Image (cartoon, rainbow, N blue to C red; front, side, top):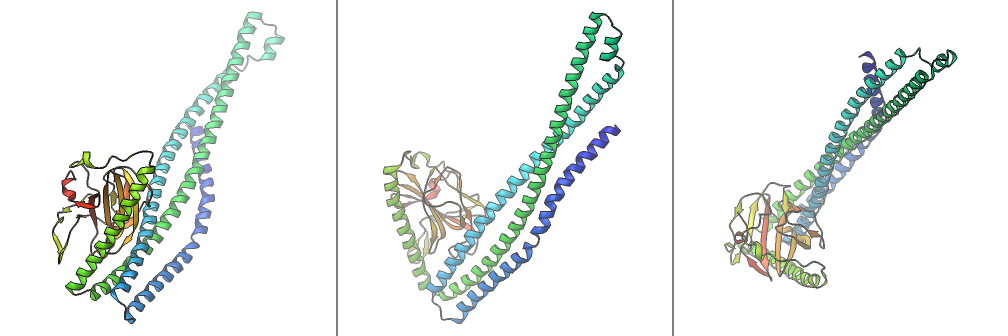
Length: 389
């Protein structure tokens, strides 16, 4: 028991010694904290200056909307980076858990190997008066000598094998300890990066809210709101038409044809988990009617593709914010707007249910939601007829 306790303490000491190397590096990283604080302060000063310029100048709604677009694009970039960091954090924690389980198995194996080796050494000690010299000098009978020689060779080989296995396990335990220390350092760095990105995101979201207040003040009349909606609708139609032409060209060159959505009507899973607002065909403002539905969600929730396809458009659009358009083949397309961030680029292939964006409130929305359309050869279809719920 005492030998086992000494060995366990020795193993812990090895792990702590390895960890101290990386702890030293972690302390060095703390020096970057002051630099990150300075960067955040510089960003906040830049955003305040942007708001001051908007307040002091006689800016038009178009100018303010351009600022809003830039703000929402910047938010999308930061939100995407933050989502990637969160994924890395999750993977790091899983890897650490796997390594910790492996470390425990190795520690248990060492205790077992130590016990086995101890018993072998004890057996060799108890039979110690049977040595080669004694057997030769006293000229014991050949049969007894041969039997003892075989026994000694077996014991020697068994001990050497046990010693080699013991050394190998100790080396593996040390390696796992080093890797765990590295993962802990990576986790600390990722957590610091996450905090920096979150602070950056909050600053930009505040800037967006202030810009949106100014924009709404400049389009206070119904006529101005209708004009803005029409302009946004025209921008979306132009993007869809461009995407349709791109889809036709891509279909001619594609190695694998997309099958469209027709066989899936009424079976498609909603792209976001949330309440679907049945707005299709309803009057939106003036003579402008809804061409899609709004699905309520929480900011940062995953927006999933309804079917396999290819991303044909991924950019900011007036009135719809950050928009992704996916071609599903046979003239079918799905449109995802008001996103906080776009996770895919034009040209990317996507699987059914794959995350393509994050729920947000871009395009001047006051609460997080997804604007969702389904179109066939440019014509808007009622998404409720296609969704399973």
